Image (spheres, rainbow, N blue to C red):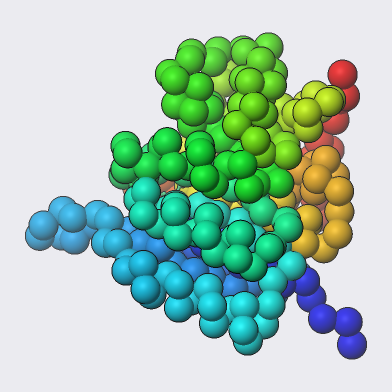
Length: 276
Ligand code: PXL
């Protein structure tokens, strides 16, 4: 039997199941890769204290990563919520020590419900230590703006310029995701040479919690399976767009994307891919 490719997510636990580690592992399962996890923090609002982020010790982070490497091994990994400078430094060291080659860095900063998922003094560490190790980084509009010292991004041509400038931070590829602009959802990939755009129709829904996590997890999954990055991005965007189309909510709160949608209903969208 041929075993599935092995993918690690290093991210926060989102207790509601829509984002973070939970979204990543659901995505990995849907795309038939073997999922593993290193939890960096637990996100869940305490009803009495309102405390929302509960960090995990560096020792426990190292232990999880070491166990996965020893018991299983790794074909690729993605990072999500890392929360602190110290965690970023630890994760960068673990990446270097283990020489993992396929690395997706999703520079998660703020959740949809405004929880702060990265401390202010961690942004420089992310730029200097983590991003240079990445095969691809996947910022959304607000994250790209922060990484570019609060540059406003309002159009696809702004996204293209941002991708070219962010590439100078040292990642092999930059994907700036335009889902928060108006009009169709257009993402821009720059590999240091060529710009490729990926376009999906705008879906009229508020239930997109965890969409970014699931998208970067899907990119990591397809890369670990051996697809080149530009193809991995296209397939991942198809997967996440279908999951968004079938998003739902159990309550009045913003709900999850439907991770099983592509498997259940088939891929609903053709992603328009253009290279220029
Ligand atoms: O969607 C961003 C995100 C990532 N990681 C964790 C989260 C969230 C949003 O809430 O909780 C752990």
